[in-house]
Length: 245
Image (cartoon, rainbow, N blue to C red; front, side, top):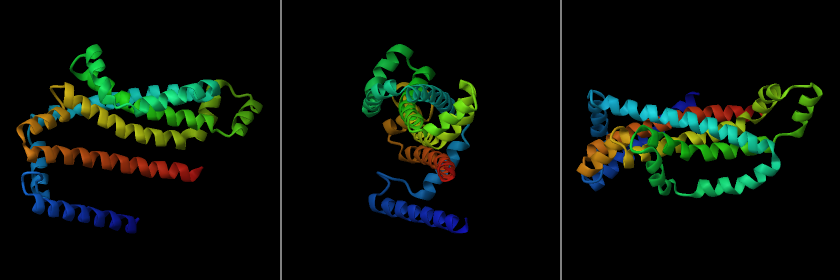
């Protein structure tokens, strides 16, 4: 634990030094200095008008993540349980995963308009497919002995899912959830950038339009800190789940 903490501290120092070096090389036209960026973050957090935008982004992201997780797990486990359906659906899901989601945004705006629903749907679209693919493969690759044991014990469908399927497939499913988390966050922010009047994505686009580099760097830093923190926690849990298998 001490060694890992020291490695993380060294990594942070190296990143800050590289950041400062790039700032010295490029000047204020492309970057802001690390200390100036952190100071701008504190000023933003101390501005009352900033918090409604933060709340809007958090609310949209959590709703999108809930939809992506619920729909992804339902579709993925259903397809994984029926092998023929899974074999037919897998190339379709992979093709959908490879499509640039920005091309679907006009359709999302057409059906949901500008506002919270469009952001939520666009974020969920990004996350649902990888979650479904990981869940499907987790069920398909399940050791048949587990299901035979459940049949011997005369477990019902719900008991089998709760006591056999979920524990056995959880490590692989959790990996899909970790990937889905990151993509849902990206999708939600993109939705705010191109079709919203509130949220961090909207603030980021407004700062780009006004060429407010300090605000751009501050919002980006906030998003990076949030994404790295949550992903680090999820990665630790993911590692422990796979180690237990």
